[in-house]
Length: 159
Image (cartoon, rainbow, N blue to C red; front, side, top):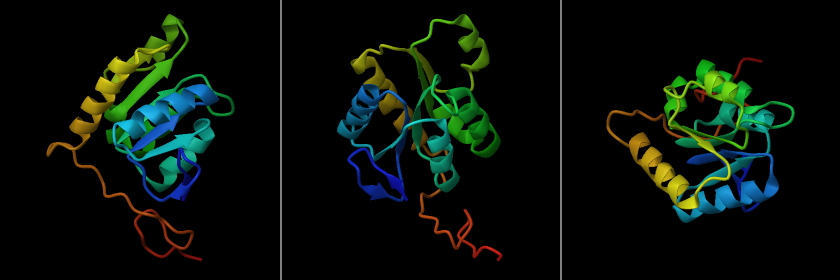
């Protein structure tokens, strides 16, 4: 279970917003919610990895520069555990450092956008990314809750 953007708890998410800046978190989660997406906010990369251990969201908005665990480490985790999700990640950064473009393989993600983002453009990208995740060619695993007594597949964990 995770905290949703309105403070409640939920066992599934369609959009994972990974952002450490509270005003930007609020803006991004509001955009996603208005687009009809069930949204979960992770305040840093460590929290995002916790969320990803339980579910694979349909899309992810990912900041790169965060405390504790940064967006690059989240991308590495996704690459190792949910490789199909890479194509459904919109990376957001305020940095103009060209090395970021080198570290983030733009061909492996949906889109790389610089902050401040144009809200209309971001909204269009979210809608297109979500639509692509629902096509017949993209097989998304069913979202489900995982209890501490079961593993990711729903089987009872060994003691």
